[in-house]
Length: 369
Image (tube, rainbow, N blue to C red; front, side):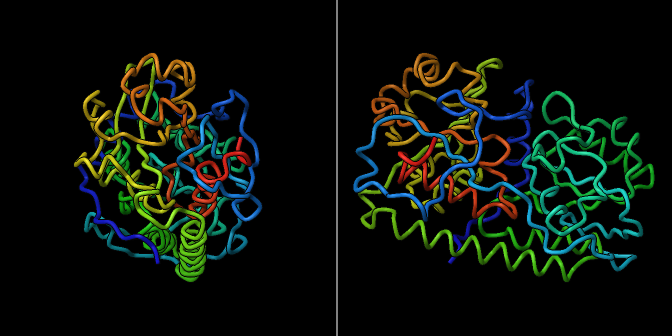
């Protein structure tokens, strides 16, 4: 069964956006892992040999999705329009034209959903987090990392915008509505508990509810199966499970955050059979790291985004900039796991593959990069 988590408040999502906006370099471009190599297809959990004791392992690893290709449930389905929906903010929106779609959020989730619904040919632009091969040549409508540009959006003349509250400034969204563009705001929460719901919201707004149901069911089934597969290789005794923290680091901006309860990282760590020690110590949301908090957490593994690790000069740079990390079991064993910025917290149709890649890096790191 999928883990279920209470939906985080909009303020928490706004905090994520504020943190990421400080990373002026953004998260676009090919990610480099702990070894400094550009990531490509990785091993799968099914083809890997798990460690007898994952807590005893020493050294870094990079989680790489084995197959990141899109898998649409239909080929250019014909939407039933007009489609009238009540969005996540309670606003009634009517969509009459899906020929020019913009799907925007800080995670890259909504654009991926549109592509996997089979409507990718109608997407006219992208956000920074949407950098997979099929969308990479589309014009960016975000600047300075994740800041919406009203001018860039209007130049693309979208007929519908799907977004959430994770991108800003919000005045840009209001500007688009004033310009007569239907804007559908979907759930901003990201976790293993609402992926299907998010898919259904996007599909309903675009007039393809049948394709949405098919994609939602396929995604939920894959996530459930993957969580069960991971549970079979993760230690059964809670005392033996990997204690994991998710750090958001951006060296060039001096940003060092610990992600805790209802940040999305907690759902990810739970799904891969780890102990989210930030939640364990009462760390809510996303807040600047404190030496005391990090040492108290005593993680076995530190999970980071690949470009974040790159921004601090790799593992040596991370330990130098955050000496508290060196005083944890993770730092002592150099047990740092990194993953592509645009994948690790995306929570969409590719979630099962993301979980698989993380499981390989955690439980069979000899097979990972």
